[in-house]
Length: 209
Length: 176
Image (cartoon, rainbow over all chains, first blue to last red; front, side, top):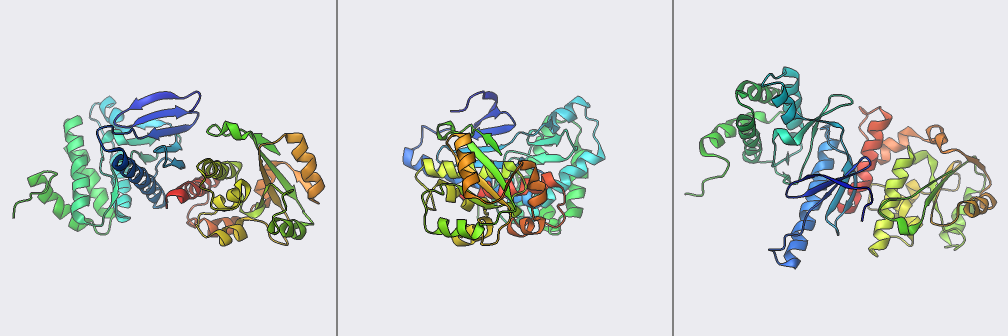
């Protein structure tokens, strides 16, 4: 369908690069009934595009949305020239900057302020833009909208786990992120209280009782 | 004037974009558009709401997509381009804000397909105005209208940042 496209990354979803655009296509899940699959995939594509733009409007730097093709479950968006935060931290050997932590904290605070839960916050889904060093949040494929402190706490918990498992001795950096988050998000108190609960029990809520 | 090919829709042919300044017969053009004059198979856009060519191409891309899927919400591809430029789903409001009115001075014309020189001479016979280069967008744009229609935060001042919000609003329209 697209000439000059090359595959740059492939997870559960494929991503390819056309000039300056990223083309993200969701694959058909052949194990699902086709009718159900079509409906679910369409909903997820829509969801992803909406969250992406909602975050962008609220001041979080994200790739710019160019075009959504629901029929082909494809999203076309800006190709961000930048460095993955994961590589940045690994390169600097655990040496981290307060500035970076503040950028991450602010971005999550802004996202949660408009009730967008990212769903997959890891250091691989955060980029630092080459042009202006702004922090770009990518991959809203698992995102959804919720105002519950519980969901926001789980969102933070996922990031905490990602931090501690991929970056040894990064407890201080995560603390700094939470500090900025607390300062920049009005309803952060309830979320941080919940985060303590989530830490005790893990990401999944207990269904007992 | 300038021609582009949209990578996703090569079969539609090139997309031609023209700018006419100091147009004197907007009222006549609008009347003919409203009576579905087949000779006017063009998208006529008020240049005050056009910040950048990219904005036009994104809207055109969306219009061609709707056409290919037989999902046009307006009469034809060209009116769909005008409709697509607007972030709201209201058709009459979109055409009023982004289409031409009786006293529109500067007009952007988009034509999908066709031979460049033929279109150029046809447009010059239709429109009483001065054909200008697309760089003149910077002069003809009315930032306040753009801000209002696309609901751009007053904190955003940078041209590129404004364009980003505009492009996003056009793209999200199909799923909102």
